[in-house]
Structures are given as structure tokens and as C-alpha cells.
Length: 133
Image (cartoon, rainbow, N blue to C red):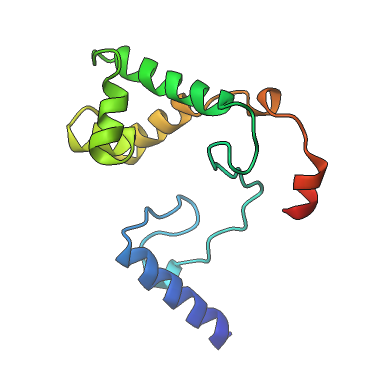
């Protein structure tokens, strides 16, 4: 149990240092109630055509969805890319420039909206890659 307690403490200190948002239902910000992050059910490796090659189809779909999200909220066409260039990600730019509320719900809604793409329909199964991963 001391090993588990040490793991919890190290993870908690790291999360606080990097200002990681705590997972609802898994941690409360209270060290006494803090738990190890759950094991992920699935991992999507987003490597922009490095891990898988699809001719940038997934990346282009995501870019279009991000741009459309911005346009439907009154930003000019192409502003999402300008935010990306100025801030490193469109989300970081939207937050920094006040185009999206800095709260978990607004951020989660944005991420859900722009990442809702049919990845399984866009990529073909690669057995060699599966074996490596």
C-alpha cells in the first residue's frame, strides 16, 4: 500500500504542476480522495499521417470541422488556421483571444464537436501496424 500511496502522491504533484484538469468521477482535487487515472479503453494515435497514411484525409476533415466551428460562431473563414499559427492550436487561440469560455463544459463541447469524425470509415485496418503497437 505504501507503493500505491507514493504513486498517487507523485501523480498528484505532477498533475498540479502541469495544471492538468482532474477527471470527473475519478478525482476531486482532494489528495485524500485522489485516485490513479483509469486505464484507457482505447488510444487514438494522432500523428498526422506519420503513424498511418491516408493522404491527409483525417487531418483535412478535422481542419475543416475546426474552421466550420469557428465560422458558425462568427469568426471569418480561415481564422481557425490563423489562431493555430499564433497560439499552437486553434483551441489555445480560441481561449486566449476570448472566443470560447474557459470552462470545462465549453472546452469539452468544442473538442467533441470538432473531433466527431468517422475515423473508422476513413482509415483501413493495417495488421502490420496493429502487431507493432
